[in-house]
Amino acid sequence: MNRMNKIYQFAIILILLCNIGVIKAQNNYDHLEPVGGIYDIYDFQFEYYSKVRNVLFNGLTDKPEIRFQVMPSFTPENVLDIEFDRNNDKYFLTYHICEQMIWHNEKCEKVKVQKFKTEIDKESVKLIKSLFSIAIAQVRFPPPVEEGGMITIGLDGKNYYFTVNEYGYGIKSGTVWSPNKGTKMNKLVAIGNKLIELAKSNKELVKFDNELQKDIERLIEELK
Image (cartoon, rainbow, N blue to C red; front, side, top):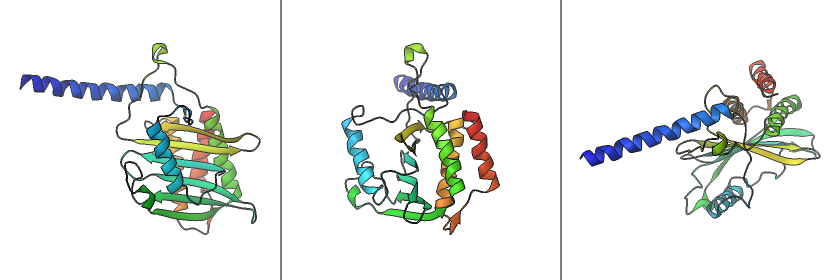
């Protein structure tokens, strides 16, 4: 019994240490990190991301103005795009969310996707694209452990991916894992979630209200 108690106590301490590591890392390195390419991810990740692209991204452009992608641990994957319709000179918020998780789903190709689409005004697009551009411009790797960096271990949370299409440079992306409250990255995620709410609102035309506009402008200043 004593041996079992010691094992249990060790497990609790290990979990606490992992959580402390994550908090410390996120407080010190409050920025987006690079998104792994096909040459620096594991085979199972490549297979999973390919399934996500085939199912969740079906019907989306491969060159969105911005993209906010959410990859949770235990709930369905979802993605929000702002797309430009050149034929009609209009921008649209497009949101896709799976009805079941793709991860560890043997029948993922049959997963249904809920889709929402609504027009968004040009000034709002310009403002949110400016925020994404500034955040992604600051993407960098965390320092190695021997230089004070921390290994983050995520068991229950979400990976958030931010993408912007910059003319002359193409697609750029950055990612963050469940940022702590009060951090700049947490505020960035909150704004992304607000975009999702607006995409699902079924408004004829989305235009940022004063509160959201000020939140975006304040975060832009914080990130500069």
